[in-house]
Length: 445
Image 1 (cartoon, rainbow, N blue to C red):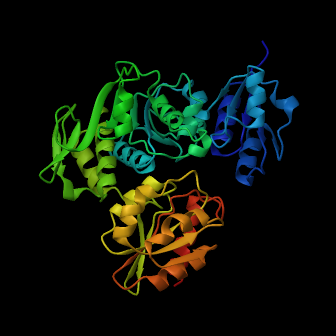
Image 2: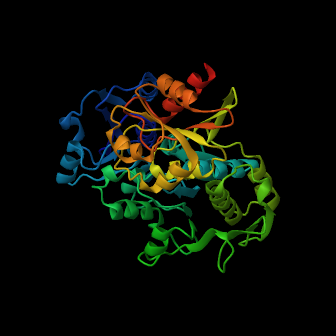
Image 3: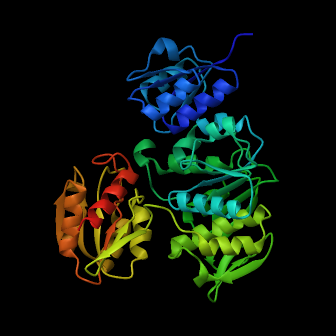
């Protein structure tokens, strides 16, 4: 019998992982990337004797595929994807492909904000409980690579809307939906409903044995709940106590109501701020459903160290506190960051705009900010929105200039916050690169 041909578009972490899994499972595999492939991934492809190309997509080698795995970064309307669709060749995500080859329990997390922290926290609790668990998706190593080379009982997977777009038969045993606010609308024809529908794909294929964990006070989630034939058991959480919640707070305590009831002092949580309260609730419920003991959950929620580039304290320079929130690539993330600021703040924002509406943070900027630094190649939209607020502003095109400008504006006892609201690709390789440069410039002051 002829081998099935799998073509992988994109030779990054997810693409190379999918290619290796396909090779291990006996497929005829080919990898194609329009950009240059990093040496690290080239070496992996060579080690597994997988054919690949870079700098082009050769139609003759792609349009003969039985199935195609595409990187989440490639839009569904890219020319090659449209050609594949015309030919009726299925296009799936790496997660969808990997899910076929493992019986591990899948704990999947999505949402516009809080995904990475919640995913990392759930993974930390599962590890603390001594479970055999892998971390995958938008963070950690590729799920497909882990399925090919490891044998985990559980996977904790952060899922972006882009990954969910090309998932069809994959099933989340525990689906966690943190919130839905406008993000990536440039990829969804500026149609919010298309983005919402992508997020709700996390529930497809759930059975009555599965669980759906979600923030009960999110207006969009509440509105959408009735539309979908949800099969999993519902585990809603919210800040204030009301009937039917799986987690809530009351008089300074955080309560987990089901399946196993326990509580802890809210002040003892490792992560501070309202958004982190929700992250802790979602993580605690997911662990509780999975049968992890109360005392393990409690201790893990008290000792978790947080995620790099998410409200990360860098240092204090001559009385000015610097905080790296480079992971805030949308306006709602910045809203949470500003909301958690205790001192007057100089905000560094800007970058590649994804169709942002800055009105969401307008009141907080007026209340909390003493200066704004616009860091980007195209700052016209920021000027148009914020200049009328009467705050000092500075226009910069490099991280060093941003940090210097912010430091000049800030008084001792105030905070400089990098929380850009935007993607990083105009000036930086990634949000991580942006955050690393910020930390290096601050430390050089």
